[in-house]
Image 1 (tube, helix red, strand yellow):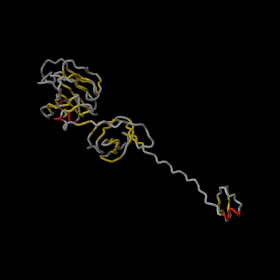
Image 2 (cartoon, helix red, strand yellow):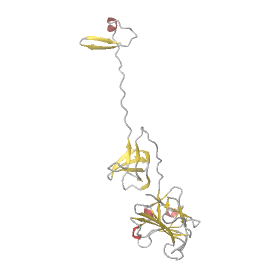
Image 3 (cartoon, one colour):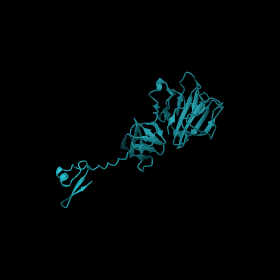
Image 4 (cartoon, helix red, strand yellow):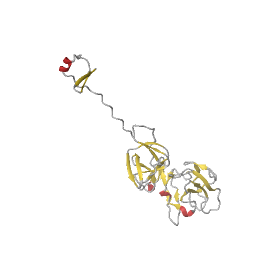
Length: 271
């Protein structure tokens, strides 16, 4: 799963700090009050709206993305755009940046949970979220955030190329190996591949520059299509020229094409 930053303009006004600040505050832009977007497909599992307590998250939305991964979007304006139990897609609008709850200025408090919904499972969103094409990043944070590289488009089956067919959702990494940075994922399609390497117990296929996907040891992630060698053509016999003495002895026509075989001392001429 790849999380997308939930705002169009990414500026970190307060970083994640273990034990004191368990999320990422995003608030940089000339206009405050931007739309807040779903970071990845999921189901809304908790909401709070029109909060007047001045405490904690104020208006918020929490989303279950499956595989024990959750995101939370806090301090939203009154009037959130989703309801509890609603299925949402990456890029859907949740609500708008606000200043509700325990907040001292318009911003988004963004949290990521890995391993469960408990607050003890909160991790630094910078380690999980990516900047997608079209999003703008403050110059102060350009070297802090990670960037999502668009994955090469899938193609069609071509027997003249080495190709892989993706059978499940796979991370795409910058190098062959589990230490390679994640740049996105693929979930289906056929891709040309240009290089193969073994690393970390997997077979890695290079589908584009700095884009590698892995095959597991049971061969369940990918279906491999290798170029099949074409059979060598059967050479056409090229009969040797008939000696003049044979032509005269056996009265062979000059323009005819003959094969001469030597069998038990006899010369057999076949036209």
